[in-house]
Length: 299
Image 1: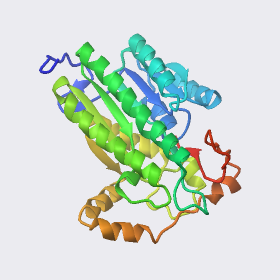
Image 2 (image 1 turned 120 degrees about the horizontal axis):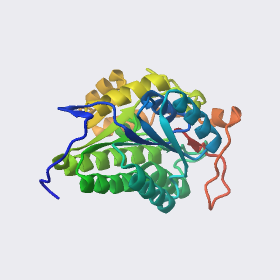
Image 3 (image 1 turned 120 degrees about the vertical axis):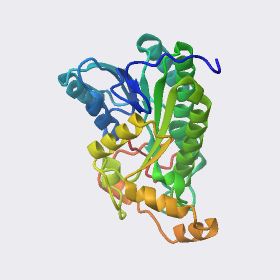
Image 4 (image 1 turned 45 degrees about the vertical axis):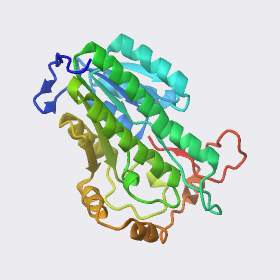
């Protein structure tokens, strides 16, 4: 299919994209995903909203319908990669998505008395934050190539991809891997008129962030983060860091020796105990009885 003629849909205009009409958003039941859903909702737009929590997903769906959108709910856990891919394939066969936003993810840290995350934590983080979105994007890319009408794929990452995080090495690795995959996929799909964007937010005021006992500079509200993400997608940004203060900081980090960055990061910690103190339900990883880590849905 290399060099195939792309029949761009009406929502492409030069280097910009406007108003995609069929959109899938994963992790749409809360946080950034919910804000993206309500921001994209309007008449003549079909939103397919995917999430684990049916009750929260129903509330978001209701808001989107009130704004005139056609809304389809899809309750799936991205941790079940095979089931997720089957559902994604069937949904795309029916709706032929213009835009797919892989937003679902989890955050985790090591337990207070541990030096590293457990092997089970690492596996789950990589499954949900990297393996599922990467496999899903590959599936959607192949479908868009066959349709020959262009399209867009967006992957929501994190500034954690650029910083050594001794208390959350698995999380940082999952986001760094997502960045590498998205940029490589972007290069592979350019000749087909398919835009791939990876957007890396800093702190966003979600339930997880609210329970994080640490300094959170330049924290964004979910609606503001959603608007910034939509602008990055519309401009077909290959890689974007939001807000701009974090973009500037990550640029400076390029010139900091790796050894010094690691040494500096080792001097800072992250207290995850407020998650439990605030009554956040914990998710014990299968195969271990250790519930002392702070494994939480963040989107």
